[in-house]
Image 1 (spheres, one colour):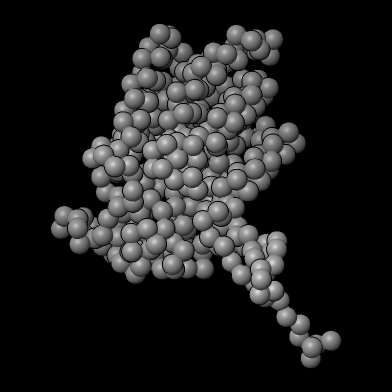
Image 2 (cartoon, one colour):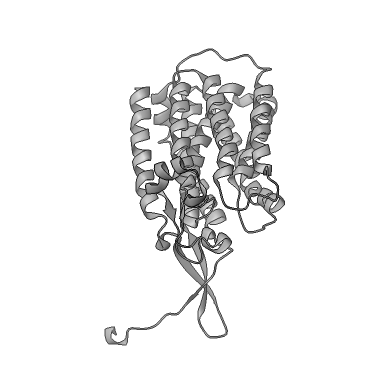
Length: 347
């Protein structure tokens, strides 16, 4: 049952990713809607743009949360403690996505998943220990399985979240002609070409219509595959393996993939984000070394999946989706002008 579930999930997600890679570079896939909120001096409405970046970020976060809740329930953890860990991580990571970008890149209107991830990795073990110390009346969270569930859910979340980067045209790769011949041969047919003056690749690096390495797509697929491997390991009871495999792969791929990107990552040859990835892996390895490895006991997948239908989970995930969508999907770097008119022949 575990293998069938993981394979089915993988087929669905990879098929969805393949479809999105084909359409998201098109100009119409940046903005979802515009809300008029005031008039300018010409009498036209000024609009607030809501983006597909927000849709994919919120959806990937919701899927990650659902998988995390499912894994936590499958090993018998308390919903109260699970909800507290989720809430605390979101309270830290969502603001950090903008704060770290401001510190590293000097920009106030952008997000960095790498920075938010680093904050989450550092905080997660401390939050778990804090919950066990002060909220033990609700039970106790086993550190390594909980960290494994977080890491696996993160792999899926960031993998699918890279679709948001394709939509906005951020986190883009280098020009194909700048890369080695073998890279051009392998990834040339899959290269991305962004259009639209509001796409980041176009306005930040003048890459309008230029073929670039589809690094967002490569990262997206690799992270989902890594998440699938971590998920089957978790369900089979190999929690430490699930934790260190997903954490090490995702962070060291981030370390390497930075060298294939053309967007601004700080002024130094080695970016702060690359340093964060190494620190995060070492920190987790040291922290978990003080805890005994849990017994390898299979998780109860059916119990975890059944629990996802409970009202508190459904409503909670919907609330998280809306919060994330409006926080990340409300564009502050673009604006729009709207004009409304009446069809008098239809009156």
